[in-house]
Length: 190
Image (cartoon, rainbow, N blue to C red; front, side):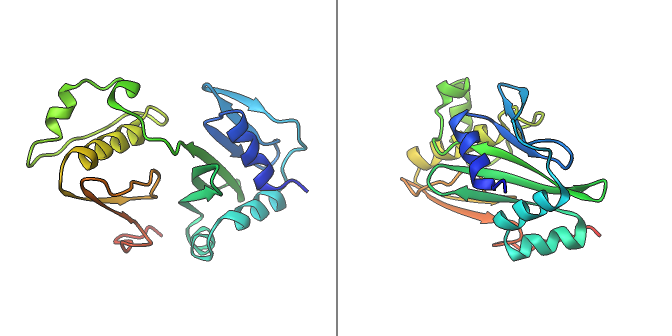
């Protein structure tokens, strides 16, 4: 029986960005933007449901039953963290897992201009980080938070859905709040 842990080890070993688990198809990795079908039997509805239950909390399982899907962060031991999206399609469960690197990147590593650092010293304002899936929005925000945390003595509060990058306290204090765990869901779609 195929276990989720075996697949997550392969994701980490091959430095994949995503793992897709869809009924009727073997597990699929995304590596450098391309799909790579693994050499396993096609997944059954029982496979995807079993794998979902092995990583989702009872509250997230309840959310899947009530609204058909959920998203959460999942730590795979000390090896990796994943952003997990469980959703229904054609009446069956599918799972998409995005690998979240543990290591925070620098401005130089992600190609951000030093001009952006100036913005992070302003006392007020709003910075929008936009783009398509996989374009680096979360990594950019994590880099910006890490920079503020390293160089400024301030209290940073985030509201995330789900928490992806964990920030240690440095010169600043970082309070990371997760929607549905630390912050109540204000609007629940039915």
